[in-house]
Amino acid sequence: MKPVRKAVFPVAGLGTRILPATKAMPKEMLPVVDKPLIQYAVEEAREAGIEQMIFVTGRGKGALEDHFDISYELEATMTARGKSLDPLAGTRFPAGAVVSVRQQAPLGLGHAVWCAREIVGDEPFAVLLPDDLMVGKPGCLAQMVEAYGRVGGNIVCAQEVPAERTASYGIITPGARDGRLTEVMGLVEKPKPEEAPSNLGVVGRYILQPEIMPILGQIGKGAGGEIQLTDGMAALIGEQPFHGVTFDGERHDCGDARGFVLANLALGLARDDLAPAIRAFLAETGGG
Ligand code: G1P
Image (cartoon, rainbow, N blue to C red; front, side, top):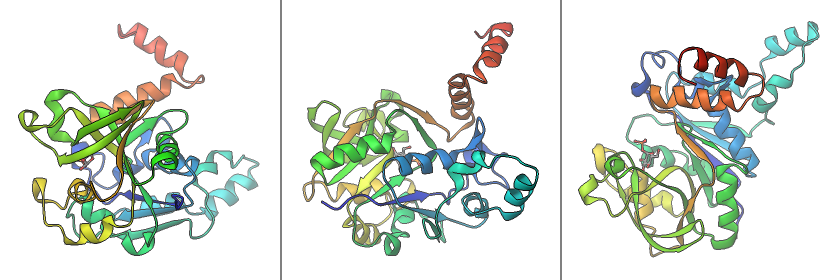
C-alpha cells in the first residue's frame, strides 16, 4: 500500500459567506486566535505525515503562498532586534514542499481537485478543506491515515449532521460499522432532508486513490451546477474499498461568521494565556 504523501487544499473559493472580510483577503487567511485557517489545516497535514502541500488557488490568493514562504525583511528585522523566530515555525517549509496550481474557473470542488492531477500523479492523496477546522489529538487526518493503514482504499471523514441540514453536505449511505469505521455504500451531494439516505455527512477531509482523477475529468455538472467531488467518489464505490471515519474531536465550520466566532472562543478558551480574560469577559457580560 502506497503511503499518503501529498495533500490538496482547494483554496480558490471567493468566501462570499463571510463578506466583507474576504473582499480583498483570502478567507483561508482569516485568523482563529492568532493563526490563519490555512495554517491549521497545513499543520494537521504535516502531523499526518504529508510531505507536499498542493494549493489549488485562484486570482487574489497570493497571500497564501507568501504565508508559507520566507519573509526575508521580517526575519532579518526580528533577528536584528533580538526577537525569537519561533512564532514563524509552522510557516517554514523546504523548497518545493508547498506548491500551487490555479483553478481558472469556479467549476466546483471536484474540478478544483482535478486541477491538481499532474502534481498528485499516480499515488493516493489527501484533500483538506480549510473551512473545516478540526481540533483533536491526534489530528483528524492522522486518525484517517491510521485507518487507511488498516483498510486502504478511499476514506472520508464522517460526522452526524442535524437531519434538517443534509442539504449542506455530502451524505453517506452507511453499511457495516466497526467502531469509528463505517463502510460507505453510497454518496449523494446535498440531498434534501426527505431524500437523504442518512444523516451521516462528509466533512472536509478525504484520502483518495488517484483513479478518481480521470473520473473527475469526465463527469458532468452535479448539484448546484458544479463538478462535485462527491459524484466522482460515488463512482469509485464498489470498485475500491470506501470507508468513513468518525473523527474523535471537534469540528468548527469556519465558512460563516457564526462558526468563526465560535471557533475563536473555543480555541481561545483552550489557551492558558487567554482563557482567564475570556471567562472574565463572558461572566461580566452575562455569558459565562
Ligand atoms: C463541500 C462538499 C460536501 C461536504 C462539505 C464539507 O461542500 O461538496 O460534500 O460535505 O464540503 O464541509 P461546501 O461546504 O463546499 O458547499
